[in-house]
Image 1 (tube, helix red, strand yellow):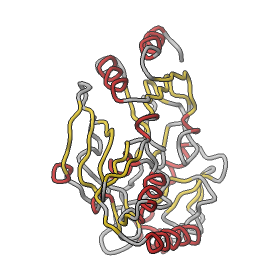
Image 2 (cartoon, one colour; image 1 turned 90 degrees about the vertical axis):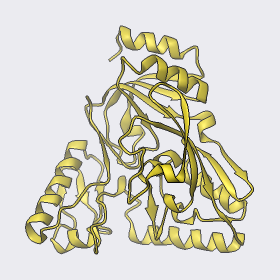
Image 3 (cartoon, one colour; image 1 turned 60 degrees about the vertical axis):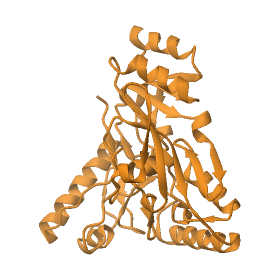
Length: 304
C-alpha cells in the first residue's frame, strides 16, 4: 500500500543510485515462487546509496535485505516495510591472484564461473546452488562435502548505523548452516574467498559431475527452497522423512518431493501457508514415529 511515509522514502531514494517499486510481488523473487506484495521494493546499486538509505530508514521502517530468495518462505500477505535488493556494484566478481572478491548480490553461479576461468578450485561445491554469495555466507551454505567456511577469508558488512566494518574468518563464528550474520541486523556487502590453483579441466569435471548429481537426485524442475531441514546428527532428514511414509505427501499445492524427500516442492499453486503447514506436519510425524526433532533451515519472512 502506497502511503505518505513510503512516498517520502521513494522521493529520498530517487536522489540515490536506486530504483523504487511499490507493491512488488515477492513470488517473483523467491525460488519457492510464493510471496505477496512488498510495500516498497528498492534496488540499490552502490555502497554509498545503501549507507544513505539505511541511515534514513533505520529508525522508522522495517527493512529486509533479499538475495535470490532461494532459502526463503515469503508470506502470501506480502511484507509491510522495505525490501532491499543489492544490485549493480553488489553483483561484481573480481579475481585477485588466488582470491576472488564477490559482491553480496553476485550469484554463486557467477562466482563459480569466475573461479573456473581463473583456474581456481574450492567453489565447485556451490555450482548449482541458486543463491547469492551474500546469502550463502549468511547461512554458511554447503553441499557435497564443501561449505562457505572452507573458503571464506574475510567479509565486509554494513551495521545498523550505515557504517562499514570487516570480519575476518575467525570473527564469523561459522558452524553448520550458521554464521555471525544469521539473524543479525548486519548487511553483508562483499566477501573474499581464498581458493587454490588447479587445472581448469579438472575443476570443470567436478562442476559437471556435481550438476549431474543435482539433476538426477533433486527435483529441480519444480519451485523449491532446496533442503528444508538441517541434517540431524548421524543421519539425513530426507531418509527419515521417507522412512516415516511421507514421500509424496501434500498439503494444498505443497508436496514432499518423491524424487528427494528432503525437498518440499511447489506443484504450481502452493501458498506460503501450505508450505509452512507441511513443514510442521513433517516435524510432528517424524517426532512421533522416531523421536527426532527436525529443525528447518529455511528462513520465514512474515508479513509484519
